[in-house]
Length: 67
Image (cartoon, rainbow, N blue to C red):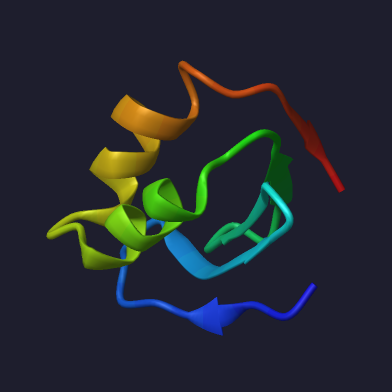
């Protein structure tokens, strides 16, 4: 999955394809979150704090796995 770099202290890059959101964290770990709407991905990119958005709108609501 192609990811793009983002300006965040906790997330290095993000990508989205067919409902799967992929986040690479600054610590080097990468996670995929499932059933994420494209509008949610767009809101993540527009958020003033990507880390806060992930913690409040992504992690509590979507299944995930480390890749």
